[in-house]
Image 1: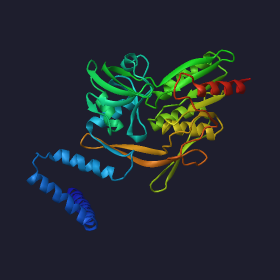
Image 2 (image 1 turned 60 degrees about the vertical axis):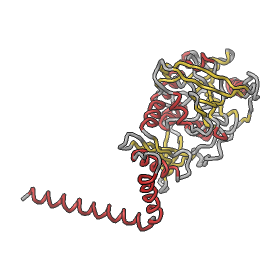
Image 3 (image 1 turned 135 degrees about the vertical axis):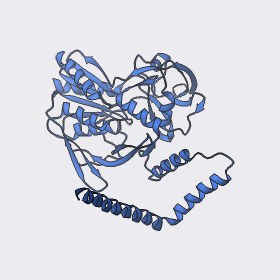
Image 4 (image 1 turned 180 degrees about the vertical axis):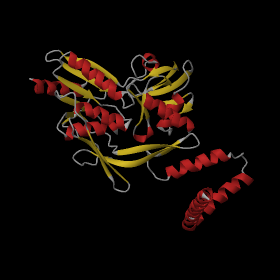
Length: 381
């Protein structure tokens, strides 16, 4: 008798579920009949008449990517299996490659920023600002950042052919670089002043180990009895949202870091824990400081914890969530907009530094860092 009740319950459940699915499909067809009819017609014509052999899996993948592209959101994207694996490698900060960060600049130019010290890219002579023109003989014009990075990654020991345009002398250079396992350190640190003793930490990206690396550098600096610290977020295009929150924990004391709102207007406020470093702090930013960099910089500025020096930031105030899919790929979807602790929406606007300083296009002089050191000396006197 009990088994019959269970069976009857399952039957009712799946009947209701089937009805809901049927009604949903019916609604989609009723409201989008012409579009769906066209799509089915196109698929049928390709199958029947195309000179080229169609592949159902590629057609479905293309349709899926097209649905996401219809959002006109540059940050939402369908990731195929290879692209999803690549993103996970980036967030875990270990992969086979040459050791460069790539940013998609205005006009779609794929630009190299901050070749990682000690990597094949740095040894070969690639420079910050080099514009990628070809990857393994394939033109990089119009190529998006994710596809370019995927082509540049590969098994250790394999060779990458890379062509770049160097704006300093308006010449193109060709490189043949052998890939290695790249353990990506997100942090570099050094002492930039002896009297008073001032520390400097450069954060290149936000990944799974970034918060621990920052904490290690800060502890090392404190052991040396530094009087103040410069945190360099220039040319940092962002990364892991949670890493930004964890790093903010180091510098803020139970203050708001960021608030986020979803499509339904539901707001979530993220607060810092008990901060471990409270000495004077200067943050360097520029036009390539984006996303997680802006979350951290905005939190430190709005809470009066740090002074910002440099240029207005990029202006990416959106949060993406990655949803793994059954085909091995994933959907990277913009799901939230974030606001600084003062409620400022910086999307497509950016964050204005407290002290605007522009570095010269040519030459090795770092006026932004010089100004940061000058201000930090004033704060520690």
